Amino acid sequence: MQARLFNIETALVSPRMVVRRFREGDGEVLYELVQDNTSRLQDHFPKTVEALRDKDSTEWFVRERLADWLLQRDYSFGLWDNQSAKMIGMIRIFQIDWRVPKAELGYFIDKDFSGKGLMTESLRAVLRFAFHQLQIEKLIIRTATDNIASQRVARKCGFRREGDLRDDFRLPGGELADTVLLGLTRAEFLGA
Image (cartoon, rainbow, N blue to C red; front, side, top):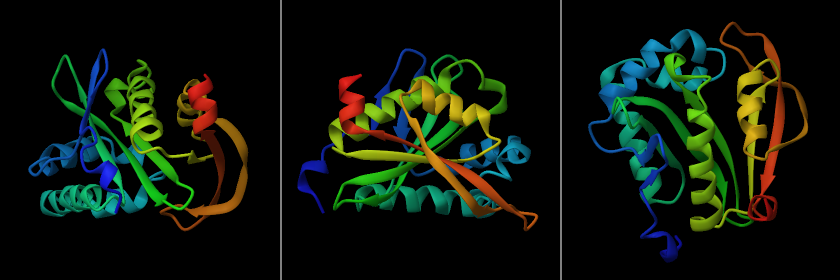
């Protein structure tokens, strides 16, 4: 445990978004979001889709993420649109290795809100949080080679392609898929 992280921000505000830590009771709106986007999420986040199979398990997921936040194992944010006050996505900082420190990022946004720059705006807020408050030295994103939209968001935020990982991910249908590894260091982010 790192005492310096006891009082970090739990809500990040950008011009069009509120990016905040999950709270008890957010399971219902997260469940609705995932249900509305299951066809888009199934191939990229099969474990998450399975974990959020009903309202009770989604509330359990939210409470696990809240506990992980308090235990400094995972920092998960819901993305809330300022205009509609609707949850429209999620960003997670996970697989944290505090010895470096480094972590992995995962994110998705509602189909009706994609292509408007909202994920890029939200991700930039989370990057500031990760590099300034958590003092992470490196963040990585692994995404399917055909997930061009995710790669585009990552590149807009300064991530660079570090390589391809062959047969790195098993799709729900059982076939293996390649992923692209993108990385961003704290020095690159602060120098940008």
